[in-house]
Amino acid sequence: MWKRAEKIAERIRKEDDFLVVTHIDADGITAGSIAAETLKNLDKDFEIRFLKQLDPLTLQALKEDGRLLWFTDLGSGMANVIGDAIITDHHEPVLDVPLEKRGDILAYTDTVEKVTEYHLNPHLFGLNGSTDISGAGTAFMVAYSVSKDNAYLSALAIVGAVGDMQALKTGRLEGLNREILDIGKKAGVLEWKMDISLYGRETRELHRMLQYASEPPFPGITGDEEAAIAFLLEIGIDLKDERGEWRRWGDLADWERKRVINGLMNLMLDSGYDARDVQSLISEVYLLTKEEEGTVLHDANEFSTLLNSCGRYGFGDVGYRVCAGDRGEYLKKALDLLQGHRRVLVEMLGFIQDGGIREYGSIQYFHGGDSIPEEITGTLAGMALSSGMAASDRPIFAFTTKDDGNIKVSGRATQSMVNKGLRLDEIMNRAAEQLGGAGGGHDIAAGATIPAGKEEEFLKIADEMVRSQMKK
Ligand code: C5P
Ligand code: C5P
Ligand code: ZN
Image 1 (cartoon, helix red, strand yellow):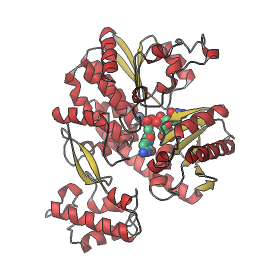
Image 2 (cartoon, helix red, strand yellow):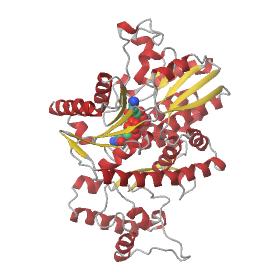
Image 3 (cartoon, rainbow, N blue to C red):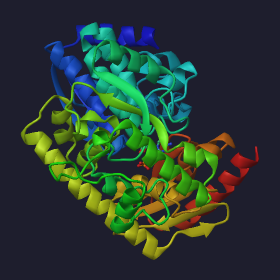
Image 4 (cartoon, protein in one colour):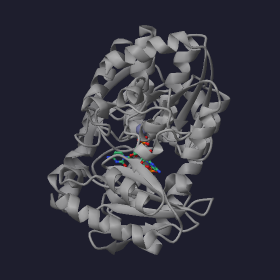
């Protein structure tokens, strides 16, 4: 992969004018920002654009742009029709050009070699795109090959990997992501340690961090502010410091942290959680050492949520400015968007709870109709699955109506389902194709667009495929 990255770097040095095209989520924004910073550092001309997904019409327009296209965190799924471009991505690649498509306006190339010449993707090298490296990571490999001075961009690569939940399988980043961590540590921009895995470790008031914990929830505490406060007081933790300010996780002494963790673990065991869930309370956390402690930007997980709050609401550019170093106007705007994102998630989870999650054979689903914005169906499906709102023994599919009237589908699974053979990307790809749509993604998380009214048929196909995959 480093050799391929080197080859792409050589090409970049030779060209002058670029159009960076990337995805709207945290991994997409960091990937695009890494590409943009790399080009900026080389004094190249470039523009960056954010897409919900790449479709044939958009691709055709992009190809007519004339500048060299650099796709980040997307592109691999259409590699067979992209033609001459740079792709740094981690989605399942589609390489072969069907015979009937050759000569088609979209199909410039007809050999796998041509399709992969400037295409960096872990799947092309026998690696795993959901755990070994993310879109931002592949973009970083190119950045670092262009110049070792770009080592500082490793921090963004890790934010991207964490945003794509690449550490979920084992509680720590693996594969090439670890190489990137080492580069970041040497460059003085990254550190990591074992710590409590709750969201808000950096910025939330202690009792609120517990109150809002949902993946998994703490019975009797989650959703109940008073109960969270009572729990902390009972185990002897002061809630405020001597100035009367609410304390955060980072303000606690070591012995206090151990006491909170012990208390939570006991509570989980008493509530019937299995050892794996209890263990997952502690995981590796990734810190951006150049950022101020106690801020959203100091923690890779909180940083990634900040970026999702931008891109998923049409403000990818705001996220990019923050990645490129803005700590004024754009950071403020991003923090406002984060507040909005939180409100939307709470409201939408309530909506899903009220509407109910339905079982369908070996799968389960909910339909967001016009109420759930398509950009967050995946996030919500994932939250429903990990929070216990949905059954944990089967994949979940979420439907929502897109602005153009078509249906967006998001699928989410757990690692143990994937271990049993589940491949959501394959299901999305096949089912959508049969129904006249398009889809793809990763084994554990995938999405598709299908025509309206085809939901029932989609469920039928998905149910059958899930059964046959997991039987194998
Ligand atoms: O398009 P992209 O590859 O960046 O998105 C990957 C998606 O997979 C993210 O939305 C991420 O949250 C999701 N994911 C998940 N569970 C995992 C791994 C990834 O929901 N265990
Ligand atoms: O949109 P959602 O978060 O459900 O997407 C999950 C994964 O599937 C992401 O990696 C996304 O890029 C991918 N996806 C895709 N094609 C689609 C929709 C989503 O490859 N039409
Ligand atoms: Zn990604």
